[in-house]
Image (cartoon, rainbow, N blue to C red; front, side):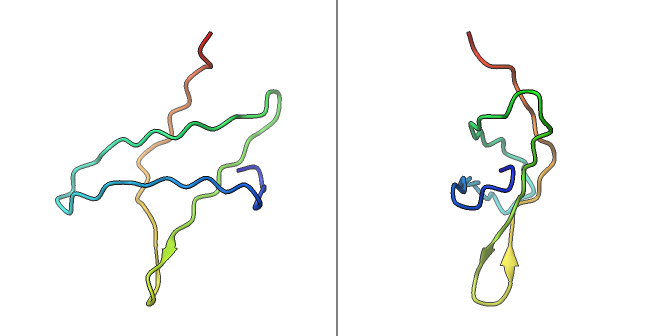
Length: 64
């Protein structure tokens, strides 16, 4: 996130193989007052790279 390749977050997403979309939460700390960048990658399975299909990213305000 934000170009920090030293601190990569991992998101494990379940796969139903039936076209069912599942939500998977991931807690990240966004920088206040700046434009944050999220880069999504995939895993190499020995043949090519596979990554999740993203429908949307939802950002919730911080809890008090």
